[in-house]
Image (cartoon, rainbow, N blue to C red; front, side, top):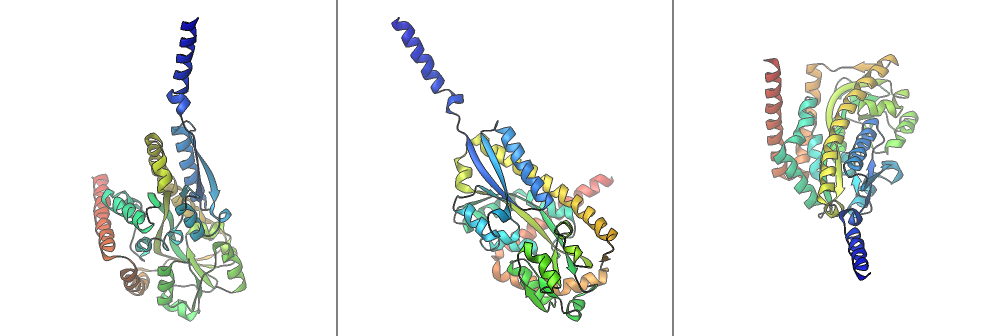
Length: 349
């Protein structure tokens, strides 16, 4: 009888201390933008993590507006009240001014280079390290993915050159990103107005603003083209979404869960990039069908934008962003351009 009791204790102890019994479940929240590509990227991130961890790590998805403004959400992540966030430049720049270097107007000339720059291992690691340092060790960069290629939308126009900004006295809405504000002031906007994304429609309708800039799908989905009649395809600025994690939470996860998070970041990036491209094309078709005036600047007109925008941005960036990071960005950009050119060359052979 004593042997049976000993056997029972042994079996019970084994069960209590088996890997299955000791498995710990984790729950996290990802805050993400409302745009379709942001939603789909968040859903892909969630789906992969939960499948790869057999549900041991579950991800709750919350749209940004439900948690406050960009800065508030960033602060929540830094304080550990939020585990993951997917902000644009506006939600990063106040903590990490380096992010503004990617908004350097006309820095990118094609999507393929824009997508591949974050895949440069040396540059990505540098950016991760710099963000971690700037955030006091709280924010870990997981991925950079497409947010938008930015164009102009106005109630007056068409806007073909910077001179037209002055002629039509365009009151311009920008994001709360200092570089954006400096840029459009240099380009001749009559006034720079910062209103939140949900207020853009009413601001256009009331005449508080006459113009704004951003991605095609974002402008269409927000209903802004019900009020704005003119689109100028300047492609003046490309912008990333920054997938970031609370560093302490990430570090608390088992290795296999961290691997699932890293894999999910790659999948979310591919999802955002592909859907953003598709959504932009569909939005442009819808704008054309709605009878909007869509203007494609000539090479000479684009040069006029660049002649003002590029040096104005350079002066601002050199003041705000450490020179070594600017130099590292330009060096990585050159490597990326060469890599993309090599891929194109191989494909044509």
